[in-house]
Length: 268
Image 1 (cartoon, helix red, strand yellow):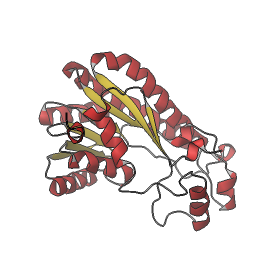
Image 2 (spheres, helix red, strand yellow):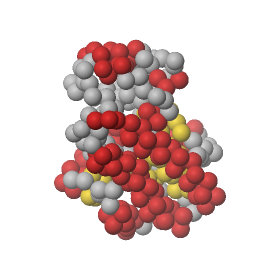
Image 3 (cartoon, helix red, strand yellow):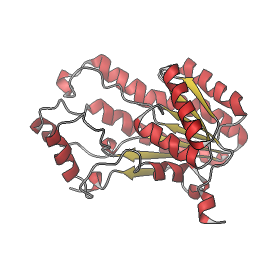
Image 4 (cartoon, helix red, strand yellow):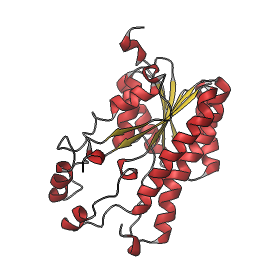
């Protein structure tokens, strides 16, 4: 087979949760450009529909916007059914939706327990809900690709002095706990579903720079902490990883955590 053809997704159907912006949108674009029909989810239904329309117009594929708060098992059931009913198949799931840091500081002794619980519910329980309900359809079909978005934060203990020097609250420990759970979920679920034809992998992104929302001192220091000396680029650096794991190019890859962090987590 031509190697380029291995990356084509013509006729496939994907769900990308939280795809209305940033890395979720980047990954949805990558799949759509490869010919995949895409379901976009967001807690805001109007935003999901708007993004779906933009993807369809740009890449000439069919798209659908659906509301989803993945913390809710009931909403996840409804989303998975609506996605399946749309095309009669679900080939790819990218569990990207996350966040939920809340308003309390990142330092553990100052952290609001409700923010901690919400972080786990959003980033780990929500991922589990989506895996559980979407994979039902994949197992029935005997094929599927699940990509869970974890984080390089799950792999290392962060040097909080970097945040302190820029007078920042810092990334909360509960975020790392949730994303470490995503990696564990990925590996064990792969063991359960791979024999049924459903691949389960994870991507652990490092820092991807969102213009204008971080102190310049922190941006420079964080970039210096990566082997490549820079942050990940929005619109570029995660697309290939997502397409690889979603396509036939990765048909002998399962239970893998693909780290996309410029060498940040491996450089000490």
